[in-house]
Image 1 (cartoon, rainbow, N blue to C red):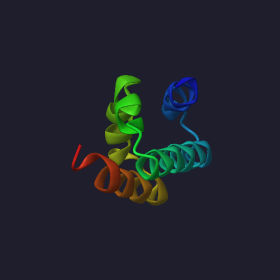
Image 2 (cartoon, one colour):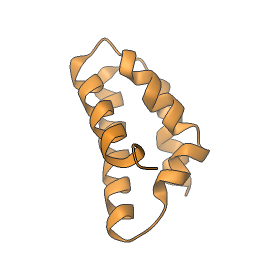
Image 3 (cartoon, rainbow, N blue to C red):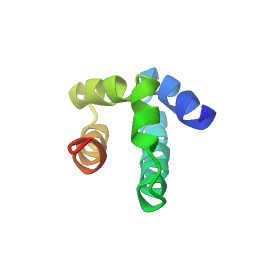
Length: 79
């Protein structure tokens, strides 16, 4: 899925607002994937998205940190 690849590639941007928008979009895609029994989690991992999301746990912005923790716990803990 090119959309996931494109979103994951933007996770390196320093702007916290952009990062939050991208994380929201990824979260929505993962939520739809879960509801439709699609492995979008695997796509995120293939695009190095999981590594980038995990790296954002060190982000200075609290909202980014909280969003990342929520995504990891909801979609990647059991994966």
